[in-house]
Image (cartoon, rainbow, N blue to C red; front, side, top):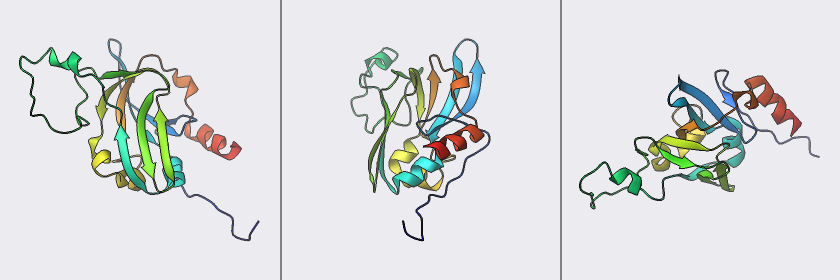
Length: 169
């Protein structure tokens, strides 16, 4: 081993919860009828490990027919990926299905859904400017808002537990 050891500088934000898959969770609202709404993104640790982002592709509904029932005529001239609006209630993603694909200078990283959820809003800004994930992973570099079907918040890690987890891996 050389005198100079490799290390990664990163920060952990106190007002978030974390997963072992290096996602952060910030609860936006809690509603008895619709459930909890979380904003999620990748941690500063993961973005530092991945390197410079080249592209970010966010999960989108493959079949948007369910949203067409609210519109009398279909807009065939619609252009874009739909990343800025995922629909009235969002599309469903099952546990372990792809939420996002991150391509960086070190390769491709797939972000899987930790639980079944509905994707309510996608941050299209990160698709247009993937460097936001590197520059501000806890702010403008967020990925999406989700409504988990059955998330046990006790399984998420506190900032201290996440740091301990990183030291153990």
